Length: 185
Image (cartoon, rainbow, N blue to C red; front, side, top):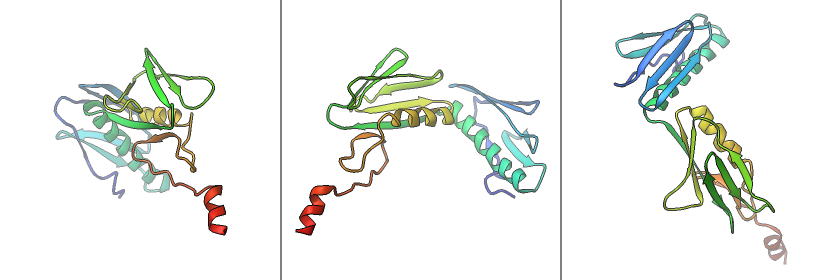
């Protein structure tokens, strides 16, 4: 049995779960999400918990068992608490602005980058530090994908560390030419 898949998902108060026609709909205080699961698994609800069981015990069935349970758990957490990713802009003159449904980034190019914010995602700047972009929403996959797309505009480079990075990301630094010449002399 899958260690992840066999754990029942508790449904908090204020969250409604509907299971019909291979589709799970989760509705909570922050919004509503739905997921169509594979025929290799069965999803049921009992005693305020969601239980995922698999129909096949082969490799694919085991994989879908854990996957389905994790995705439904993320839906429940998303409609109750939501998800959040933070990006930090590191570099002289790097800044971000949110104007309407666009994020405008100045990250060292000759022109600003306009990023259209996807539907269901909220992007704002941190109140204390304007170089931190906070991306939040109820769908974990879309929040992560949006953060990855924004980070891709200027990936942190290893010599000075400039770029867009996750707030908890460690950028491994390289010595550069000057350090190599000093060590050789």
